[in-house]
Amino acid sequence: MNYFKSKHGFSLFNLKFLILAFVLFVISSSAQAADTIKVGVLHSLSGTMAISETSLKDVALMAIEEINANGGLLGKKLEPVVVDPASDWPLFAEKARELIQKHKVAVTFGCWT
Image (cartoon, rainbow, N blue to C red):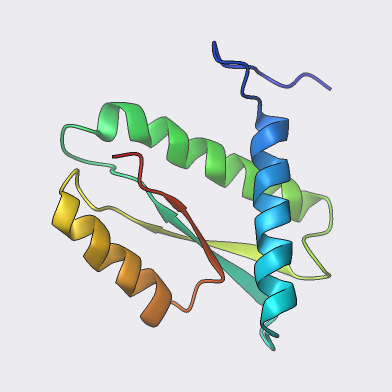
């Protein structure tokens, strides 16, 4: 397999492993009855930080897609929930709260800023 490495040595494999490990931890600590596991993706898709964070969102979605293609996690598919905090620090907190309270995500990835 060809995993693309960044200039800092971070690869897609590392990201997938981190996602898997963290989601397993969250799932093991709280039972879920749903057929999917919701994963929050909290990166700026607009504003000044969008130039660097859009690719981070893409990598997270690509990792989720690959995990789902390989059977999901614990027999469940991962369902990404993407929000745009628009490069606004106070909006990051609001969007994180929305992911947790409204969308009931099991885990959230994001907050580059």
